[in-house]
Image (cartoon, rainbow, N blue to C red; front, side, top):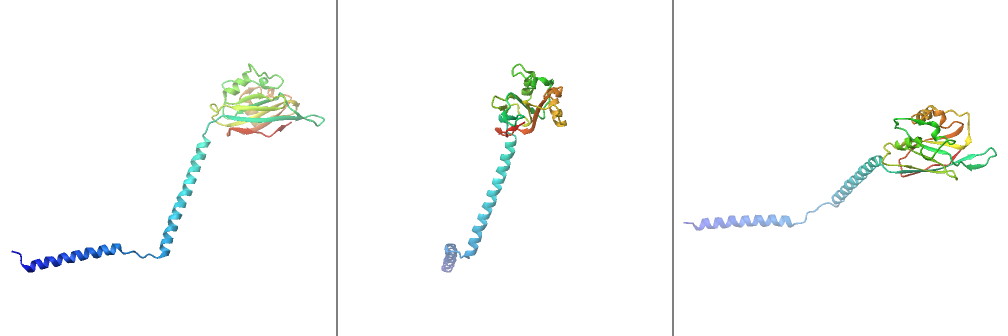
Length: 222
């Protein structure tokens, strides 16, 4: 049988527990006082962290973009113009000059005759020399009546993008010119004998990277 003392004790304990809970709840509801400089500092730190991650993302994105671009394969158009100066000083269009885009890192199974790309014996059709260059990803054209030329590099064959541009003048003669070792080696990879390629005619030589969709060259003057 429960005595009145026990009942009063249980009631007192219950009241104490209820009071403790109410006190805790009251503490939770009370506003927390934080110094203003602490709030500003936390905001500044959050802004700084966000800025650092943003800049890091830009750097990584730029690196990935540049890396991917270096491996891109696309068609490339190379445009230029050739002129020559006469003995009287007049500057004229060097029409019918031969322009050859020689791949630097490729080697054909067979070499073609040098005379096949010489301006005096050049044939635009049924020319094995043109076929050899094209098969390796290069190009061969003649300048038009205005001395202009337009080369097209097929992206499907353009594995390297490194070339030598050889221009053999049709109208400017030069009998004493000797090829450099680099020129002789590059031309000799595709044509033989090397001397027959430009015998008696001036040449222009230019290392070229076909790493853009269009390359506009400066006017060549002989």
